[in-house]
Length: 210
Image 1: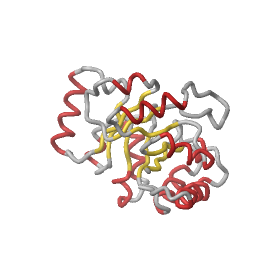
Image 2: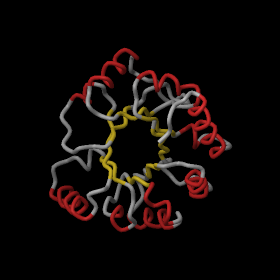
Image 3: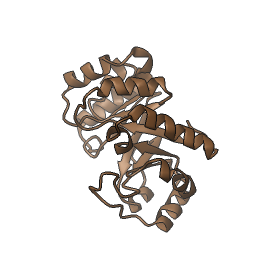
Image 4: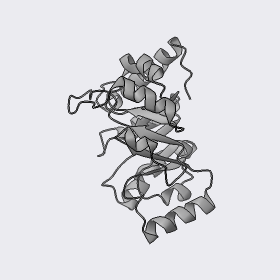
C-alpha cells in the first residue's frame, strides 16, 4: 500500500525541514501542492530539498520543473486537463523528455471513476473518504459504493481525507491502492513521529508499504 503525504497550501513553519525528515524516515512520495506559488517560489522550495530526494516529489503546478529537477511526477488538476495549446505543448515536452514521469489526478465523485481517462494515470485520488480530522467537512460516500467501485474500475485509487492510524484497516478492506496523509501530518505537534507510527501500524497489520 502506498503512503503519500500532501503538502499544505501555504508554507508552514519548518515545513521543508519536516519534509526532509519524512524522506529520511522512508517517505517515498510527496505531493507538492502549492496552488498560489509562482514558478520562482516553487523552484526555491524544491532547491531547499536535498537532490537525492527530488525523485520522490510529484508537483501539482508548474509542470516543466519536473524536467528541470528530475522529479518523480506531475499531478493534473482540472486546469491541466483543459484542451489548450499550452497544456498540450507542456505535456508533449514532458512525455518526450521524461517518459518515466508518473501522472496522477483527483476525483471527488465515484461515478467519475467510470469515465475513460484522457491520460493513463498511475493513480487517482478519491476524496473525502472519511470525515475531516479538523471537522471542516464530512464524507459523502457510502462504504458499499466505494468497495464496489474500487473493485470494478481498472484504476489504482488512493484514499484521501480524514486518514489517521485508526483508518488503516478500513482502507485496506475497501480495496484502496494507498492513502494520502494531510491533516494527520500537518496538524500534528510531532509530524515525523506520527508518520513513523503509521508505517509501524501498517507493519503490525501486515500491510506492505510501498
